[in-house]
Length: 231
Image (tube, rainbow, N blue to C red; front, side):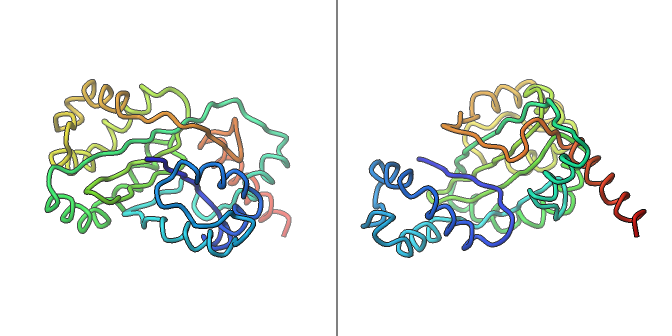
């Protein structure tokens, strides 16, 4: 399995069109190693490739962004205006889980959004080092949990155990090889599971390297305050 995960501003169609336009040769190389790829090189028929890519974009059960509707350009502008670059490391957590049965997977996919959204987003805000997260259902009864976070991995997982355990306590009993629950009382087992099931990325790009979630929130708040004062 190969996953291309991107957190974007705007519409998916526009994002895919830009990707195909600017990274066509990269996709051509990757497609040589993919089952049932588009039956054309990108340059020969970009619209056909875009259609293929769209057909392979699963709909997330839940998506979280740490800074509301702020765009990449908003964040870069705020950092540039403040002359701030930051020095916080960012890293991905990429996990891929299998449900014990098709029924369990189907039920979890139905109730997951209601369980995760408001309560889960508030808990993620409290974690304070989580940039993005996605719960994504896949074929063959699988579920992905993908995040970008700041700083130390062990502390990040401990924060999840302390502050967002309700989500994992609900899902893990239905997952093959999951750690014991409740997660809050089995934090070391949760950490070991996350460590062993975190798939290393082939590549990782951040539009604002060095900036932590807290940096970005502070920069955006300062810019908003300055804009209000200037009126």
